[in-house]
Structures are given as C-alpha cells and as structure tokens.
Amino acid sequence: MSRANSRDPRHQFGQASELLAERFLQAKGYRILARNLRTSLGELDLVAEDRGVLVFVEVKARATEAFGGAVLAVDRKKQAKLVRLASQYLTQRHLSDRSCRFDVVVVQGHPSSLGRIEHLQNAFDADERGMS
Picture 1: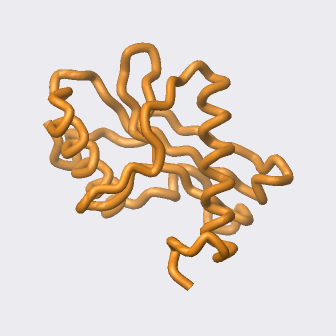
Picture 2 (picture 1 turned 90 degrees about the horizontal axis):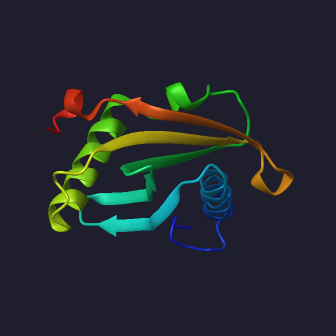
C-alpha cells in the first residue's frame, strides 16, 4: 500500500503523530499556518509561527526509542530537502525577509496512548544547508 492510502497503518500512525505534534505546539503558543503542505519538491509537515518567527516543523513518528530521538531523526539529506522546501515556501509567498527556523518534533510510542514528545527547537541551521 502507498503512503497516501489512509488504510495503511504506517500512514495512520504518521497522521496521528502529526496531529499530536500540532496540538503540542499549539499548547506552547505556536500558530499553525499550514499542514502537510505538498509541493513538487516534497512535503512540509507543519508551518507555524512562534513569536513572529516562521517555523518549519518536521514531525517524526517512532513506535519505540530504538532509533534515537529528535537529534537523530532528521539526517543531513533530509535537512537539505527541508531547506529547499522552506526556500520555495518563502519565495512563493514573498516572505524571504522573514526570520525562520527549523524545529523537529518526535513522537515516540503510539500517539493514541499519549506517546512521549521530544521537541527540538532550531534543530539545524539553514545557512549550513545552502539557504541564505
């Protein structure tokens, strides 16, 4: 089954984790601007605003802690892709002058049983990945 298939348990797990991450961020005062924003380059899980800063949020769902937490969840290749997606988002909306950052939220355990959430603000620096 493809990821787009809503009956796929992995897709359902990912969707539930993204919803949990969204609610977690809203409780912290973030304003959600976009969810699952798809473009020709890929998908941004969440775009939010935190005290005037645009935040591009990558959500990772982990059934167990076997593969590490937020620090290990998004490798350099994924970071570079997120930077390209963010750059496209900013350019298309004429927001290139806005301050922005990249956060990672990892939901560990099943979201329906209130899995543990790890939130890493400013998880990586976009300038190091080619965005100026």
